[in-house]
Amino acid sequence: MSSLSPPSLTTRSTFAALGAYLCWGLFPLFWKHLAGINALELIAHRHVWSLVTVAVLLAWLGGWRDVAAAFRQPALIGRTFAASVLITGNWLVFVWGVNAGHVIECSLGYFLSPLANVLLGRFVLGEHLSTRQAWALALAAAGVAVLVVKVGHIPWIALGIISTWGFYSLLKKKTPLAALPGFALETILLAPVALGFLAWLAFTGRGALGHADTTTTVLVLSSGVVTALPLLMFAEAARHLRLTTLGLLQYLVPTCQFLLGWLVYHETFTADRAFSFALIWTGLALYGFDLLRRARPVT
Image 1 (cartoon, rainbow, N blue to C red):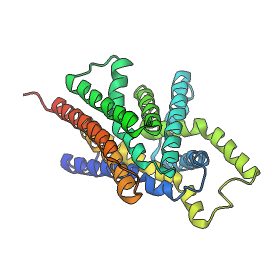
Image 2 (cartoon, rainbow, N blue to C red):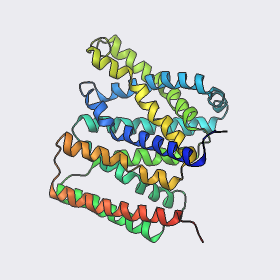
Image 3 (cartoon, rainbow, N blue to C red):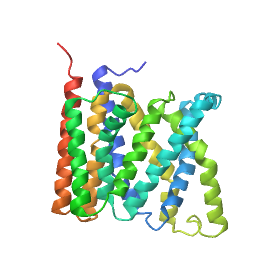
Image 4 (cartoon, one colour):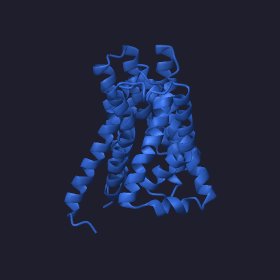
């Protein structure tokens, strides 16, 4: 049992959530420094070094028994493998998008993800859709329609992030494993593929390690820590904070990414794009209001 009082525990958990979301929101700063490396190779390194990091953490904090027990449950392994493929796809789209100069569109994907989860909950899980949620979805859809018609292209990066994250979340909802053992299992299942790909790159002389400068090498090797640290902070926060609080704080992630794309990397943000984002942000505000209203205690 924790020796902290409930207010102190809540404060610590809030800071843990803020730390996790800020790390995720500032991720473009990290990946931009690795723009010279192929995105697929970066994701393979992220898998391998995440596994190394999570193995050390499990040895320290415990949890290997849960991972071992999971291998005796074929259905769980199947769901986790599918989840691992989806999160890998999510990482790949995000890293490629960031390094190709589409940070704002990546942020759009994460702005829309909570509403995509509402949509999946309605049509896959049969969950009830409130009037406010329906309006929020309609406004978000209108925002995407403006992008397609006025800006002139389908936001494939955002849609890729939304779909992979949405179905990943759906699978994780049915997974009984805690955050750390669950993440370990995901990395274990795809690690052989990642290692094989990196070995092939090294054999053909096209891998980054051994050919890149010292700074790049250090950043590549630290990708596991960069991945695991916010995950652990989030796991700590999720144990003690209300889901409503976590749901509202998560908008720090795309907000930070949007500001980086606009103010730091000077990506184009036209009036048409601003109008589409305004529609989406209005929908998100309505969704946030609905969350707060539902969380209010009944008197």
